Image (cartoon, rainbow, N blue to C red; front, side, top):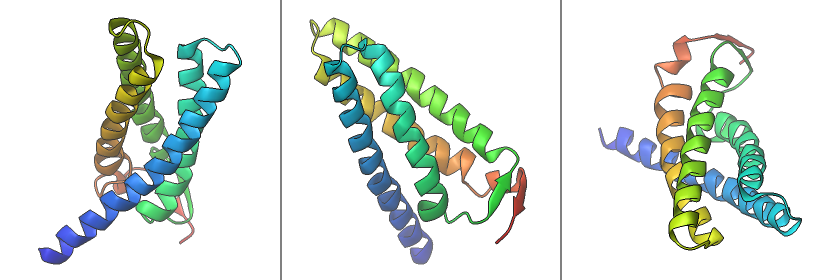
Amino acid sequence: MVTRVRREIVTVCTFYGVALLNTLIDVALFYLLSRAGVAYLVAQVLSYGTGALNSYVLNRAVTFGRRGHRLGMEPVRFGVVNALSLTSAAAVLYVVHSASGGDLWLGKAAATVVGAVLNYLGNRVWVFGDTASSGGVRVGR
């Protein structure tokens, strides 16, 4: 039981370490795109998508220890989780931005928190969880 709890704590900490890197990528790209005049919701989709790609690569290999090439539902599930996280984060960004009188960064902060929590839960349970490993064919180690 204690070993299982410790293992889960390590998994959560690793996930959020990767999430921190993804967030830095997301925020930096969001900033650059916003400064370049890209509409803030378009900038959100592009910056989030870039962070999500990084998330898949690192979380698959480092956080959840998946090895080899994976055929099947894992990438599809990851896409669904990220689409739901992105949609939720964009909605939060829009609502907070509108309600705060145009405070873009307050909206971005709130959207990032909501997206991170939803993303962890979806990835841990559905994409890379024990029940997810039965879907798809694993090639290699």
